[in-house]
Length: 296
Ligand SMILES: [Zn+2]
Image 1 (spheres, protein in one colour):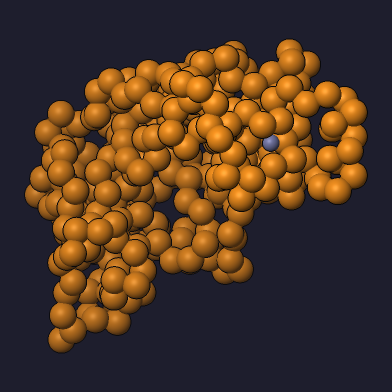
Image 2 (tube, rainbow, N blue to C red):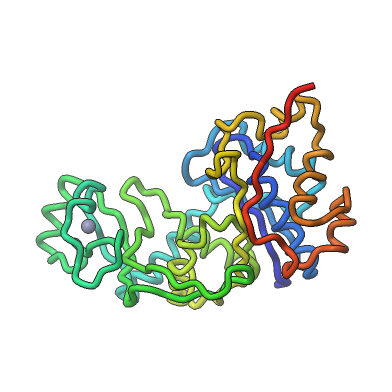
């Protein structure tokens, strides 16, 4: 399989300029290295009707193209189940019956990193599990043998982060993001992951899980987020931030693309022109502050 990069939006609403900028970056990274560029819809959770179609239309309006069809996580439960079975067969999973509140209130294990699962259900006996499972469905957790893992990021350098007994399948039966993303990237031949740097803290967990499943670690590039005027992560409540909002203010998709490319230090108005000038080492490392355009 040839190597590939990807963009993997959650269809939970329209993409805003921060999401669109990350998509443009993922496309530039993939295309500038001769990779295929794949589109994956991460619809396991919080999917909203009609959102996928609008997101794909907006990405196409910016000029982005992708290879092959759209992959949707809700079509791939068999792949996720196989991975959980593979881990279970090696004794690397266990059932967890904790509520969120129980986890928050549990005393943390000695030497456990802050925020890590305290291990309450790690050594439950068969009898304990039988009692608990009568009143509550179990989540499946990874039995991690480490407390932290170091990953290499092409923009952020060496990053060391917490790895705990994180959830692989929630107790409502939904596959956890960390498992799905690792399994999907491998199944799709993705060896380059470009995404917002809010996901950097999850990356050690994913790299560790991949290693347990015999999956090579992809190249990671965690790109700076887009912030609002107050310095907080851009959100839809920050006004006109989607292509639809901006078009209503008289700003077409081509202009939004130019603004995004300019924010990356790329003066070309087209993606093809930007591709010729693109080099990761020259990317701004600071967040981009989105200036709200005013209506005409
Ligand atoms: Zn538990």
